[in-house]
Each structure stands twice: as structure tokens, then as C-alpha cells.
Length: 467
Ligand code: F0G
Image (cartoon, rainbow, N blue to C red; front, side):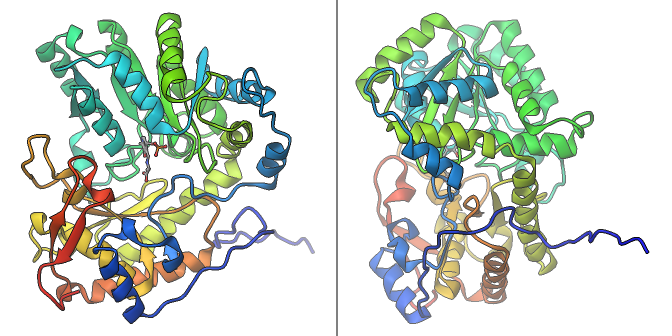
């Protein structure tokens, strides 16, 4: 008798675990005290007091034995180290860009690029600027413009590529602003602030066509390029049989350069790069990187960091890994949807985004419903998430406050760190908190810095006892 192979629905982690790190259980009373001491800001908690840490997928992934072994063999020479050349070869192989400038993380690449390109009053179109990108544009006097398609702002609308840029709005922005006031067009893949939603290849191609027609440089914010490539493969006509690496290569081929945080799809704990084709701009970028990052063949990274990234970029493109990664995020999303919780749909690549405005209609936007839910998740189950709402985006450059377009709580999943049972527990925590949603109250800000306030603002619950 012929045996058949099991077709399992279980999401098996495509790795074995050989090194473990304990996590700490706390009681709700302890967590209440810990969060109060952290001024009700989860960024100010000690990581050791968190059971499941979903603050970010950035730099929090587990590295492979191959990455660790490459790190042991690193070359720490100041100039021209072989680790740099391995890094450069990997980045060039995947992106096709001529010049590769290492930086200590993504925002350092943004700093170099925007310091050189952006002048006061310039307009920078993007599908959605991530907070550091927005801050760098504004720091240089530029005006960030988010030109996301309208479906991208509707949490429940199902669309395969909710990260797409509205190319008509792009054309209109260029017409109104004038080509000379637009030094660069950016596209963020996947669109982190808009729900980790992918951008289609067709959209990348169209943005590229428009940028070239007007002679405007086109750069990709490539943090999650591998996850985006996987979405193209499973959702876009004509890519089903293509390897993720070839999809990534095509995606980069339409751009003039990219900024990259290797802490995401570089599978590394630190690192990044700026890669580009323009020789003259690359020369200027290298000069500036010497000032702010280091010599151009290490740029703020140790040789071993560059080794980790060189290996990690390929691991992020592994088919088995990407299938598990995207499927396990979707699994969490499905559990929450089945329980009646509103999330951005379809689920993104690196995170599930809960729609807190929908869940907590009794908390006004400027009493920060998504912040309230984030704190409640920590209190009920020791889970640390991040608010992407009016605390993160509400403060305007002139000091006034305005509600953010969406009030989201992001559950970002670190790469290769948590197992299926962690994900099941996490779903239980969110569902349990949802059951108590009417008890949640708003927050007020007690003190805040002038930029990127969510990192260090101090808050307090508006109604004592309502947390
Ligand atoms: N661009 C995007 C789309 C990002 O998500 C991030 C970081 C950056 C740029 C900046 O990179 O942190 O290496 O300087 N996102 C992290 C997050 C912090 O939690 O989503 P970085």
C-alpha cells in the first residue's frame, strides 16, 4: 500500500533551537507598579520585566548558527576589511546598486541621504513615512507627504497591496510643487506605519516611471524588502514561480537607491546601509558618512556586524523561512478576527495591527486609545506592544496636536524568536483584554520632548483606577 505524505496545517518553525533565553513571569500587581514607575510608557519599562516583547521586530531577531560562525571569522580592519567586501558583495548581489555605504542602522542612512538632498521647503513624497524618516525630512526643513492609496487608510478594506502609493496624487504633487522642489521620491516596503502592508511590483514600476519621467531620484526604504517580495510572490499575477531573491532584484532594479535598516530583513541585531547608483551623490554620501558614521568600509558597524548582515540578507529571502514568517503573522491575525477584534486586514508581514479606535470608541483620540490598549496588554499579560497613533504622530511641528489618521497597536513579531505556543498565548492576552475593553480609560501626557515624543514622554491615566 502506498503511503501518503502528511499535509499539516501546523506552522512548524523551520529551525531547531540550540540556545535559549529565559523570560520572566510577573503578577498583575507587579506589572501595575512597574508600568507606573515607567510613567505609563512601555518604552521606559525594563525588558526583563516583559514576558513577550513585541515592541519591535527591529534588531530583536535570533541569528542563525551560520551568522554566528561568520561573525567569528570577521575582519576588524579599519579600512578595506574582507568583512566589508563580503557585505558589499551581498548587498550588490541582491539590490544591484553600485555603491554600498554601511551605516550603523537605517536612520543613519536616512540622515546622510536627507542631509544632502533636502532643502528647506522641499517636498518628499512617500507611501507613508516611518517616524524616523519623517523626523529626518523635517529636521532638514523638508515637508513629508504621505501619498498612500485610500484603501491603505481603511483598516477593514481587503486589498492585496495596501502599501501602494497613489500615483495620481504623486503626479499631482509633482505638478503643484514643481519638480525642482522634490529632491527624492521614497517608497517604503513594506509600509510599516500603514500596517506592514506590501507594495506591488506594478506600483513600484509605476512610481519609478513617474520619477524617471520628471528626472527625480527614486529611493526605496527597504527595511522589509524580503517580506514585501514574498507578498508579491503570493499575491501578484506572474510571480508565483519566481524565487524571492529574483523578485527582490526586480524590485530594486526600478529604483536609484535605497536606505536599509538591516535590523529587520538583514536579520541582524544592528546595522544598515545606503546603496545607490549615482557616482557624484555617492561621493558626497561617503564624505558625510566619515563625519557621522565612520570610515566608508565600516560605517558604524563592526566587521562582525557586516558579516551577520551579509549572511542575514540571504536568510531573509529563504522560501521556507518567508512562508513560516508570513503564515505565523496571519495565524495570529486570524485568531483575533475570529474573536471579533478589528485589525488591519489582511495582516501585514512583520506585525498585527489592532484598530484601537474601533475597539475603544469611548476614548477620544487625544486621550490616546491605542496607548491605553498597549498599556492594558502589558497589565493583563506581560505583553509589550507599541502604539502607532496620536502619541506617535499627533504632535505637529508648530507644537499643536492633531489626531493621527489611525489609532493602532502594533504587535511586532521578532524574527525566529517566539514559537507557536507564544503566539497562542499572545492571542489569549489580546482576547482577554478585549473582553475588558469597557474598563479601559484615556491617558494624558505629563511631559514630552519636542520630537519623537513617544520614546520618552511621561503619561498618566486620566481616571485613577481605570487601568
Ligand atoms: N524605515 C522603516 C520603514 C522602519 O520601520 C524603520 C525602523 C526605519 C526606517 C529606521 O531604521 O531603526 O534601523 O534606524 N523601524 C523600527 C520599528 C524602529 O520598530 O518599526 P532604524
